[in-house]
Image (spheres, rainbow, N blue to C red):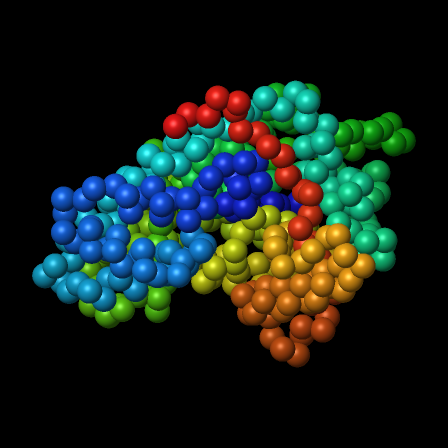
Length: 349
């Protein structure tokens, strides 16, 4: 069995780093810019209501409408400035992360292995359905845990490396009838590149860009993410797709399900429709849900319903199949999953 985690910026926020778009924007717009086009771009995004990285990528793609083929180099200059400063900013945040997990190793292993499901928000009926549908609670089962990181930072990498250094990445094992079964760390892929190399930022396809018919190739391979992945030539797209297709369970954690990653939501939707035994666990942070009132459970169920429908929209699940597919999507609101402060006591400024 393969369990694949899609890791987004919510993971870095959950460990205490300031990696939200609002954090970067505050840093970026305060930087002096001698280039008039870059200064105008900063003034524009400062006025926009942008909360998520996906919203920024969409806004950045639309900003190309201010240029034509004769002035497109000015747009490229803005693109390069954003990537350069983003790389600098996130490197500082990345350096704040402590990979000392000696006190948390068991807890992190339990999270990844999805043990004690009630501790991360599963209600008893949901737990029973999950086990019955997947057989995940059986001991005679080999499980591999793979990770697709949509972050540039190396936070999840360092945690996985620490876990992998113990028992060769084996998180749990048992012997039954002289046969060994284990649950172990598998692959980790950075879908959008990493800090200092091959960073991918932009939109999903030509439809999300103005004047796409005559868009120069040097723009297409910069700001259309799937095309940049192809241009880089490391077959990241193919490797990540292979992991997805081999998955029995997909866990989406810390991701905003934005339209600039539509290609991945389409693929997951098709994956989900292919087998009745496949499950999605979707971790959602919803600040409107209060945890300390007698009606908290009602708010939580309402939120689960809303986010399940939004996810099915993004996955392009046909309306006539949603009643069935809904049973295979578990939405966990404000789960304690992977919530741990791992910022060094002496943060690098």
